[in-house]
Image: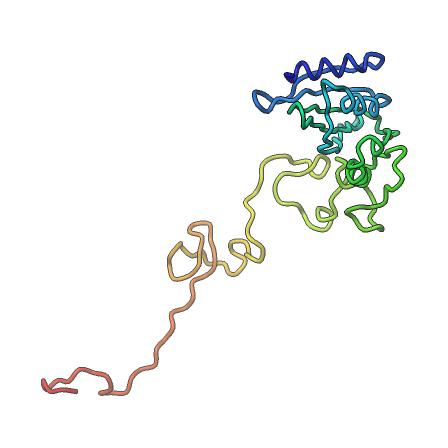
Length: 233
């Protein structure tokens, strides 16, 4: 079946539910994409698995996308090992009550994915018996993949380059980033050093002052000097 046929078949199976089908990607990478309401989430995965023409028996992955004021998209990808086609399922859930039915009883492999999505986005999967932390320590507060989550590193230290919305009034591009431990030009002195002039410099932008020339001790008279009488030393 083509991606278009896969999507149309699944929409027909979900006739009581207002589902829509599109195709994502292109050429060999195109996939049927079916959007279903939250209440039809579990029914959509069941239909994709149990229908003989679809036979999407392999659960690939499940995650979410933060759409800010529009809520969250819960996304799952299924694959048919018999017919060699896949389908991408999406369900939009509100931000105020981010809950959708668990599909662990349909695909047991979804248990790990639902735990991670619950932990990272704060989405509840009704019927999942074990939504304990998977990747973060139990004392961690917040959901780091939500777009409003502020990284602690940006609070402790200014972030180089582009800012997140609300972090700075000034937008714009990225500043050059030096490797850790490398000082800014001029921090080790005020005398610019041209590149390649005895020290480590950065040309006209300034840099590390050149090292002073090392003075060699004077040699005693006659030591190491060439003979003046034509004889051997």
